Image 1 (cartoon, helix red, strand yellow):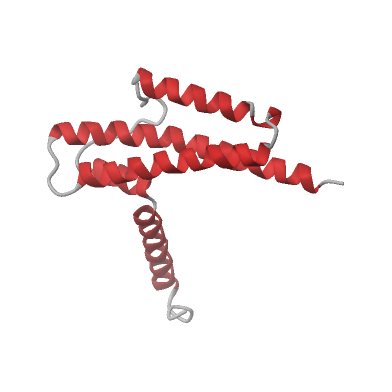
Image 2 (cartoon, rainbow, N blue to C red):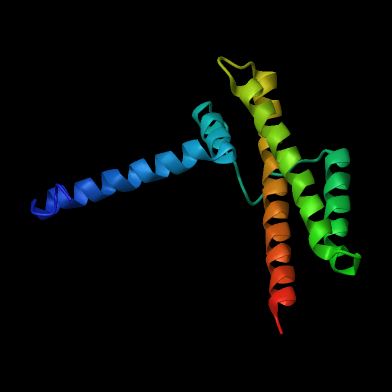
Length: 147
């Protein structure tokens, strides 16, 4: 608003600065984005196409949760079941967020940073799963509201 009557260059610079501030706020507010940013500052680069976790226990847990999500519609109370799964996912995300706080606090050692990278990769799996669960919940609610 202060730059409404300013020259074009000043307005453009003000808009760019506002966009940067909005992006910074988004990153700081989101634990996953914040952790990725902190790790990038420490020299780690994420390749979203090829970076993944190879932890077999974690991958098995993901498969089990995805199967449970796929079977929600067949349960006696699909909305309650998807809500339970969402609670499990939220609890796991909270635990990983807490873990990242410990791993990235202060001057973390190389081993802590490697574990933080693995935690970020796991969180990305859970974020996608959380989104799928939210979409399924919305679909179920729409089906119940349909005449």
